[in-house]
Amino acid sequence: MEHSHLALLPGRSHLPYAGDHGELVRTVRRFLGLPVPRRRAEGLTARQREVAELISQGCTNREIAHRLSIDERSAEGHVERILQRLGFRSRAQIAAWFTAQWGVSPPDSPAPGRTR
Image (tube, rainbow, N blue to C red; front, top):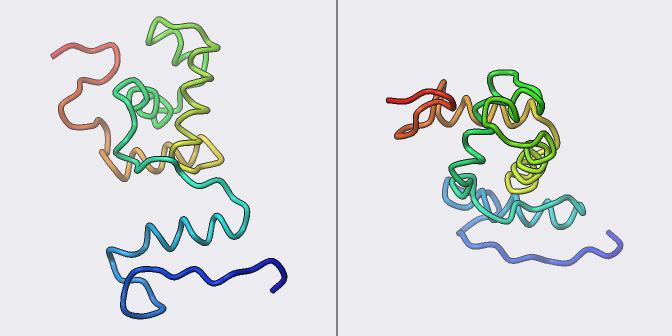
């Protein structure tokens, strides 16, 4: 292929084993010109996890802003940074990711707007 190059990946074969998949995905995304997540999914801030939870509940940016007592523009910024950090393109991907990671609510944090 034109403009392609060989990228050596850690591991013993051409097929990734459980520990290799992250590096393989990053290499393929770079080759395809797609954004590469800057941090691992666990790297979300506490506020970003709150926003991701609200997205998983189907909240709009306006509803997120209202529930967290922030500007709607700030809510938009949080959503954009989550998309960038996780390498996603849609809110639906954030919602699916959040649900797969934590189900209804992440451990050790109350749902936004609720106290323990």
